[in-house]
Length: 340
Image (tube, rainbow, N blue to C red; front, side, top):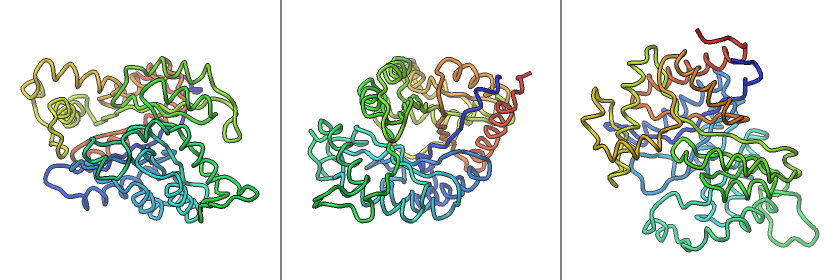
């Protein structure tokens, strides 16, 4: 693996609640993983906004970001993402302005256009279902509220104004790529669960990019799943947890993160396998060497500037070990070590 592909690796933590545990357990594990990730050299640690999902504990995303940032000292912490249609830009500017004020130079604000939930929950959030149509305008409003105060500006985010928290556009379609390019913002593609438009979106983003005050050249971060273990067989068994979860998603029966099983083929139907496997196609599962070779080819193909890694592993100790192995892989890639 060439040394020029020693790009930053980061963590996407969905704060999964495994079967037999609670949201309190999940949030304790989140902080523990963040502290380990900081020590292992990961670049940033992102959390995501999902509502009405019993298996995900990060609904109050900015609160969890504050919890993680307070318990760490150097790693960047942020949202992957805040679903802006669920909120007023002013409230998000105040929340992230407060985070940036408390933890200067460490906060990222990734923004998504999807609601991150179902229509009934959207109504419970008191948001207009058409709010997603205003996403570009809301991004600009939020950016202005986090920027310098303008003459005669009557509404200010306090804290927030002048903090210039870095914004990211998240997406899984060409819309987000076009918007990030037009606004000159970094772009994070959700290929860890929606990989179909990955290559086309990267092409659209890079071709259309307009430099901005925040960013002078395109910067694309790509999401992947990694399940690493000491052997390929052990990693494949651990990977049956997200495979079951995605099969459940296809069935419309979301729930807690299930424990691994010995035979995934007995769990899903051929149709469920096809759909779940497509959603999980940007996944790298195995020992250090297997993961290294897979990631090397993926980075060569995408030219990603950064990798955002999700790992839905049932056992917390096994999840820590997976990220530890990945950190070792990253180190060997940085050193230009060729896989055996």
